[in-house]
Amino acid sequence: MQSRGFKMALVQMKMQREKAKNVLKAHKMISEAAEAGADVIVLPEAFTCNYSKFPILENAEPIDDYETNEEATAARMLSEAAKEHSVYIIGGSIAERRDDGKIYNSSPCFDKEGNLALKYTKCHLFDVEIPEKDIKIKESDFYEFGDNFGIFETEYCKFGIGICYDARFPDFSQVLCREMGAEFLVMPAVFTAPTGEMHWDILRKTRALDNQAFFAFCSAARPIEDPTLHQCYGHSSIVDPWGKVICDSGHEETIVYSDIDMTIVEECRSQIPCYSQRRHDLYKLDKVT
Ligand SMILES: NC(=O)CCC(=O)C(=O)O
Image (cartoon, rainbow, N blue to C red; front, side, top):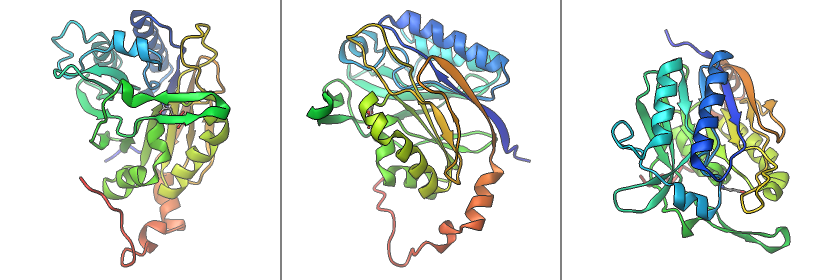
């Protein structure tokens, strides 16, 4: 019988320039969350290296052969921590160097035995310029585009994984939920502080509501003392399928916990039956792959 209740922990860590320090801190915070009873632990986007060009290029590492490749320090730490504490880990994201020498923004997810159960690679890269907010980021200058969808299957539910900017694309989340069966969307993120101020709250509620699913953003913390590094919005949080924010961390370094009852998804979908009342005869999702 599938268990539908679990505790989720969102690790809102503050990153620094040195990868080794970030990996060590992530390990410490994962252990703390596991000792507090978390079953599923989530890390932020780019947790190994902050989110700006030079730390990413310096700190990229392989993921796939994490068991044998000396360089795969972050993925190996996640695998060992998942096994040690018997927890699921949605490993934020790591700057991944593949055999072709190119760098990808990839989220490795580990099961309770420490196996790499999913690697999702960010497919919407944040190439955005808003002069009034002093924002100019071209993520595709340093990352390649991914092209897979990420479903992480557990005994609690199917998690649909996205990374940060992916949250702005409604069809992406709908494919994960309606076509692939996700009931809980999890998006490691490092929104810029100004765009977070404008859109974080609207987006987290909208993606939960339009899919009648749980939605979690797991962000890094701020302020970051090194002015050359990315200052993100914070506010790691979970929204339930009714659109209610059930936890929100603020912006400081912390771990935020929530006890999740997945039966709320069935309850919401049966009481407001958008799933069954959809007019498939008039429109459909245009999923290419
Ligand atoms: N890391 C990102 O994808 C940033 C996304 C962001 O800030 C946004 O407003 O969207």
